[in-house]
Structures are given as structure tokens and as C-alpha cells.
Length: 130
Length: 130
DNA sequence: CTAAACCTTGCCGCCGACGTCAAGGCAACA
DNA sequence: TGTTGCCTTGACGTCGGCGGCAAGGTTTAG
Image (tube, rainbow over all chains, first blue to last red):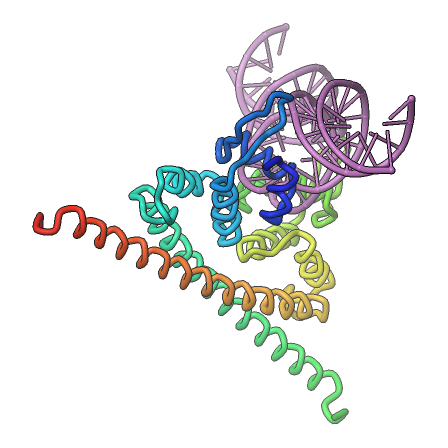
């Protein structure tokens, strides 16, 4: 199949597919006139890329998964390099969750304090207004 | 004080301070020779900016807080616009925490599954090796 | 024959918060 | 007087994952 069909079937754009190629993630054959030709396996690869991107991976992180698929595995996850990336990413996410939780608490406290301050100011300004 | 001193006292760079100025967040006077002159209040402002940036705010979000400080309040949080931003940001963080939690679960499952697959493959390949 | 619908490469634009020169002016000290 | 160390504006570079456009070649349908 050509680039337009793959783009449509993968739910992305031709621009994106060419970009993945420059990043070494997808490797189409070329037909006589220079058009890119993809087989079904590449559709699988593109799906893997899209899924991992949606999870928050960068293209560099995704490379091992594509290599794993291309090595003939039914899943891109099972190779050692992929597992290593999964572990690292899980740790990163855990870190980020911690920090984001701290931020949440700070925002919450800051908001509560600001509102309390405003209440107090209102009471001082017009004590019997309410 | 001039820009170098403020940068050092605020723990940032002169480039950053000039950038904040282009964004309308900091407004120094100018001395006769064109040098930027900052008073102590601006140090406070820069601290506010840095703190909120560290929490994950963008400069646009920070603008109301600076205005609030500049209006004479002891905290940048207490003005209505600031409170509105705090609410919005808290909601954004909550959303993000949810999504990140989902990502965490997916990564965890994916990792568990990959490892289980590898164990299984090992057992099939060399059943009595371990 | 021609128009439409593909395809190609190449290059600039985007977002945000700056970093990093470059080329020059001003100030203070030996 | 020269050197060092401030300061000024201006402009381009960074990172990632593309979007969008230009200028052309190819193929297919009418």
C-alpha cells in the first residue's frame, strides 16, 4: 500500500509517516516511480508508535518496541530493551505522580488560604454587611 | 539595584529578567545611562514568578499574581483573578493526575504481561534449565 | 487532452522559556 | 590609558512532533 492509504488506515497523516521514516522508525520499499510502498506489518508498527506516543513516550523511547516487533515478536513489549524502557518510564511516571501530588496539595492550600484571606478582609471591611 | 544583582539575588539570569520584561511582568526604571534599575518590590515579584513557574504555571497564568502583588497585597494569591487561575490550575492538575494514573496502570500491566511472556518463553525453550 | 488525485523533496513555522552569541556603550580602578 | 566588568539591543538556536506550503512528477478517469 502507498503512503496515503497507510495514513488513513493508521489514523494519521502522510506528513507524520514521512517524519517517522526520517527518524528510522518506518522503512518502506520504493516502487519504480519512487513512491513509498508499505506492507501490512508496517501498519502494525505505526499502531505501536501511535499507542506509545499517546501514553507519553518520545520517539526515542519507542524505537526498541519497533525493533522488537520487527524481530518477529507478536508484541513489541517482550524484548529486553523494551522492558527496560517500560521500567524506566514507570519509574518516571511514579516520580511525576509524586511531584504532581505535591503540587496539588500546594495549590489546594494556596487556594484555601487565599479564600480565607478574602473572607477575613470582607469581614473587616464591612463587618455587619452579611 | 541593577539587573545583575537582581538576577543573582533571585537565583536566575539577566536574560530571564529581560525576557520577563518583554512579557510585561517586570517593569524597571531606567538610570541616566539606560541601565535597568529595580527596587526591592521587584525582587518579590521575581520570586513569585519563579515559584509559580516551578509549580507548572505558564507566564500568562502568572500575570494576575504579579498584578495582585503590585496592587499592594501582601500575597499575590488573594485577588479574584489569581483565585480563578488557582481554581483552574487545580482542576487541570486533577485531570492530569487522573490521566497519569491511568497511564501508570497501563504501563504496570504492560510490564507485568511482558515479563510473564518472557518467563513463559524461557520455560518453553529450556524447560529444565532452571 | 486535461483535470483530479495521488506522490516526491525541501524548507519554514509552531509552542515556551529561555541560552548564547555579537557588537557595542559605560564605569571604575590601576 | 588600558583593562576589566558591568550594561545595552538584536537576533538566532533549542527541543519534539509534526503542519503547511511550494514546485514539481505520475497515474488514472473521463
